[in-house]
Length: 316
Image 1 (cartoon, rainbow, N blue to C red):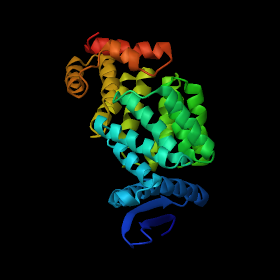
Image 2: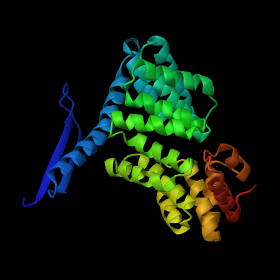
Image 3: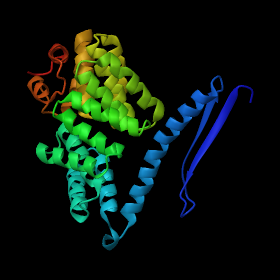
Image 4: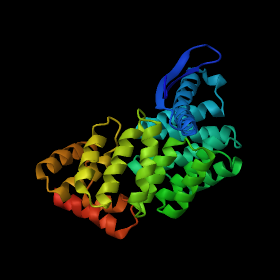
């Protein structure tokens, strides 16, 4: 219609005919090739989670005697996505079973490495870092063209605070799959932690543009909070921090970023309110705890965050 175009996309299960996903996109046709590129990336990013959800449901309905390495892997992904200690333990078991069942099945190794990153990041359980690194390397060696394998390896590098290596692998994953939303936001966080917050902002924007309704939205908002905090724009940091903790899936780290921003902005009442929420979520968090579990290697920025936590009243 004039210079406007509407694209409606649907995803249908070929076996059952069930409707899995649909979305409508309205765009201006000022540059048809730019619209084509944007929609291609957006659709690919949107379809992947829908496919994964369908595969998870399929795996969960299979009888135990019919479960293979792929089904074990899918079940592990589901448990890991729940972001809690019990499900994380179950995910680790399922990834290990998949590796044992089929030693040549690369995603199982990458899934284990990914689980290591999440469990270490959120403090769910201890996993041998060497075993995680070996699994990540094995996943890449089994399929060097698998973007998820490079993504998982980057995660292990990131937890080891080798952010340069992590950036290289995240960027490699994005070359293989430019619609890999998770790689965009993890690359952004890695850049923030190594002291490049300004460069991280476009990657957070790319992730939000591709999957505005995904679980990662809260994580991206918290990434904006941390980036603006390190850029010393505390007003922006507070705005994004509040947006992040309104998301039901935001992990406790998001509260820490906001508390530091509130400390620097001088909002004592707001800081105390968010501190109380953090205490209920993760009562072990103190200034010294965060110093140990912070992944920012830029010393000036790391100290800036800690100083904000002290100003907000977080116990030493």
